[in-house]
Length: 324
Image (cartoon, rainbow, N blue to C red; front, side, top):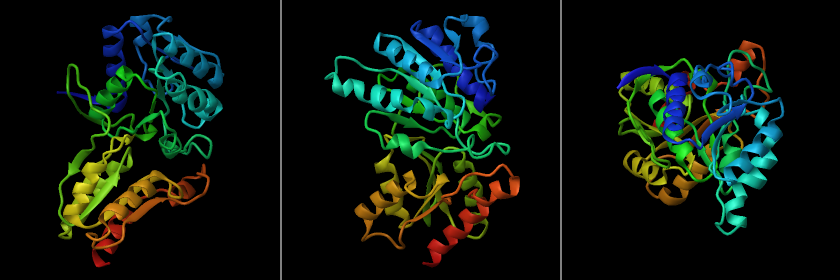
């Protein structure tokens, strides 16, 4: 194990995969200077500008070129800087990359990784703060990953680079400096296997990305009150670990889903509906969701905090489930 930050873990994953496979390369804006968050720092010096490729400010051009390159046998890593900016290239991703394997009867695949930083970060306002993971989970043909720890940011990114299907890889901007223990060597995290972040018996809390940390802190606060919450980090939204979530809720009888993104039509609704359909007779209380209101994210910190799901909100919702 080695101690490293979330950003360093992703950089290590890319470097290891580029050394292992000469068809892996990266393309996007500002990669030559290390990326907006330093997640490519030092890579151009090792691999050169042909494999760490700076691109002009045209997300549609970047994505379109990468989709074609993937179909011709390479494994591009596409850097979109912010998930909000990726909407300029959504046709190339959703209508081309996601559907090519199906429409060509399996004759071609699109081994493409699209890095889309998500989440609220330092008053970045409405056009730089969104979490749009539910959009991509809705699209057949796409894998959707949302790592919450440095270890998973290495293991999931390495798995994404090796995947033969397009992966929308969504790293939370607020997690870049987070430090943790990361396995050395060829560390891979399989898609569709959730991480049990904390064991508990009284209720199940399911989350992903940065909200997992808030859920873990809330679980500590609940434990001080005699309530043992089980915390599950999904890691990937598609495929998602239905069996793991169902098994946990069968044990606890209660489900709380926590997401930073807008609650309306969010992925938390999919989890809550699945559990309600399969376990309605075993539930001790109706499943509950926590998420942001359907409102733009403000630049002003007090207004930004007003739409943020907090540790206190998670504790209150969990206590409400126990009373209900």
